Image 1: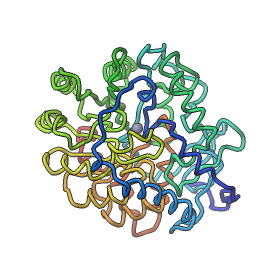
Image 2: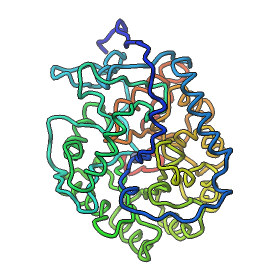
Image 3: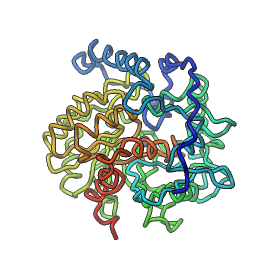
Image 4: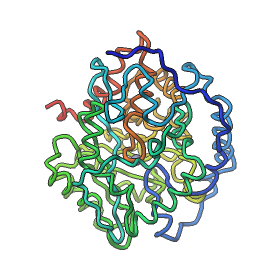
Length: 422
Ligand SMILES: [Zn+2]
């Protein structure tokens, strides 16, 4: 390791436009176009979403705004992803590109990644193209210096109002005719970023949105991965839609061709995880030995009427009724992480995806779980791989935590996907 700790990120204090997040741009954890193209919502059961739930989200935002930078790791603000080069594990190379340079860091398995989303009219997207740079959906490196990146807040808090507005527009144009960002979310670009960050494998999670046509991410991504000759490193997941009468058939077919992880997204696909209509899907997944990866918790930027699906308590019925199904709760519950952690601690089949959490919350999650059943994930191409990687390295830098590094970055994922050791 060649870097000293003499550089520090700018601690410039700036009023953050937290309120901007109250705008209801729909990006959930990843996919935003369904709000634009699927219309009707089922009637609301008042017990499913109470005033207390609404207040808890507001309180989380308020607490986060008050406590950012005051946790065990102090201020964690950087000038873009490039700014992470001020941390001891990273450097900028000759092209001013961020690279992980500490060779003692174990290679990682990213359990939460995607490719460019081309659905509905399926704008032409060459998933095999290499572009000059990756334009992440939170594009922190498009300007010099980069945008402010705070690792001590829930990650979507780094989108300012302008960026959120752009994203709303982006996701719509993406569905209809594609755009420059989308065109950079390709397999060679992902493989390149994995290489710079020492990520050996990424689990690629498609989603069946429930569109009337052009809804084939599972098939499109798997084919592109095979065409790229990348199936050793990119592990193609599967998705089915619960309202589709052939969902179980599709699930079996995808599993028969090697898919091991099913992605389920309550806010995008509009379902309560514990609704009995989903049970045949869980039943099939369990009997096939699959892993269920859920978007978990409220990200806080979904349309109001979608928030209710992702409350932590709605996941308990899955954990309880399908004890042999490993259930990954993505984003560790996002802005509902306190309740999601509490739930996860009560079930042996509950795993927490670590993407998105602040370093302060991540620290708490590691303490509470002892590092067990926690999974590294980046939500690429929403964010640079380094954003989550940096948080894990910060939280495992103390001598007592060092032994957990391997488990969090790799070992835990291998418990679920032991075939990746080969
Ligand atoms: Zn995602």
